[in-house]
Image 1 (tube, rainbow, N blue to C red):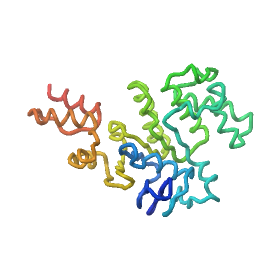
Image 2 (cartoon, rainbow, N blue to C red; image 1 turned 45 degrees about the vertical axis):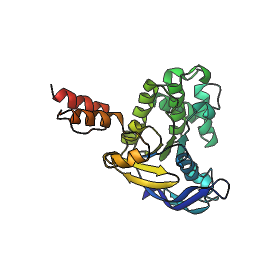
Image 3 (cartoon, one colour; image 1 turned 60 degrees about the vertical axis):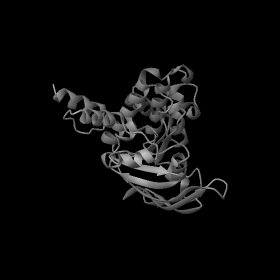
Image 4 (tube, rainbow, N blue to C red; image 1 turned 90 degrees about the horizontal axis):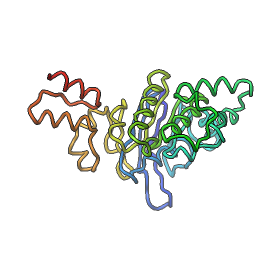
Length: 272
């Protein structure tokens, strides 16, 4: 069963200007899929449609086998979590513990069961020592980890990251991205990452490229990013490791094209 099945999806904010144009897409359960494209390509709109915050003009969406309708939206949201670009917009509680507890309260988890869940999920993201901290005193990366902990506490089958690292420094990005990969590999949670960061997208199993509301390419990262002409035409950058490895190759060094910095370091060290 697919985690998300989308067929001929159409959407417009004003009823006249199309934002999504006939999107058809399958996201397998347990997969890590990245959706990339410029601002205005429809990425975040797609995420909001999947969790029922927007209503499509045409087409259908199925989440975990359930057709997404007004009647099923609430039940589907019990299985899907979303982490937005600005974590400040997601904080409800006055402390980290209160914020993680918020979703549990909405799911009517008994009070005596909450504290172990709060501690367990805070520990998963390295925030156990910050349970009494006020969100305003946290860094951007720490806030995002708390947002992830709050989602994890509700045991979702799918987590959508909507530009969730765009406001972070490199260290914060690395921390959150490592957590995303860990969730996917160790917990078998389906990950849908909405991003314009090609280095992040390169770590996914599957990449979908949106342009002006249409899917213009999809496949494994190495397949999508190898099409340099398409990427150039769409004014999308290549992952840094791929650009660097290709530059080494053009310089006559026997370096194979790679997508991650770790692989690039291995290739360069191999030449010594």
